[in-house]
Length: 313
Image 1 (cartoon, rainbow, N blue to C red):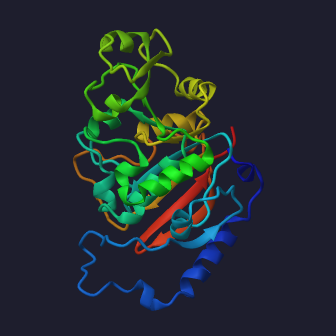
Image 2: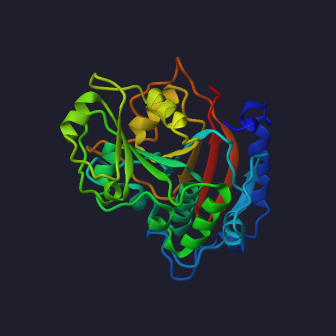
Image 3: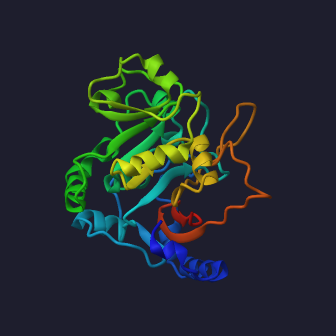
């Protein structure tokens, strides 16, 4: 976790007052619906405008390539950090089911959200997902250029400046070993963390570009042990794009240092089908409340981009 997260910050009420003042003093013209746009439709995409910084505390800062810095502003991480990235509907839904990835549906493929996803990947030594996330996105590659190809050269330049490998290492957590070994992301190369039973189920069918790490002989392994293993292997700056159950384990185990949350203006609703929030499988309130601290707020159109620090381990 970065050093600033361990310092006492300004009271939340001060942050609220500052944010409200900034919003009140904006020109109303910036908040109007563009001509011909119906608010019921998905957000417009096109030329990416710079993010508007509404609030930001003191944070580490990388020397970003010019175009990335122009669009996002300052961004950086501590030398050792685990951070997540989610997009949520206005009513708190991040997952619509198990059959497909909901992120692009909830964001409406909003260009600012895709840019931030790529930028966060570009900063990471490794991107960690669960097997269910891989199954829900059969053609996906967890690289910056896959979600925002227009700035692929800038993302590559950032990784070179940071001394990172050309691409973040994909890490897949699967206790059961239930993976499609023909998935293109596995063909490109990945580190698979599993159990002895999971390795037996894969039966050595994984591509030669993958390495398999066995963390236990039972049916499960502790997520904290998995991340300790990654740190020992030299992956210090880790992004997790796993689902709500993985994030629930990370927060309950005090492994997650920071959370990036894109708040989409869409209302998802809930009916008979189960729709998940950002944290599942870990009941925290009222006995184990986890109070996060706001680090930054950015805005594009009707979307808010939030960054929080989780309590120090």
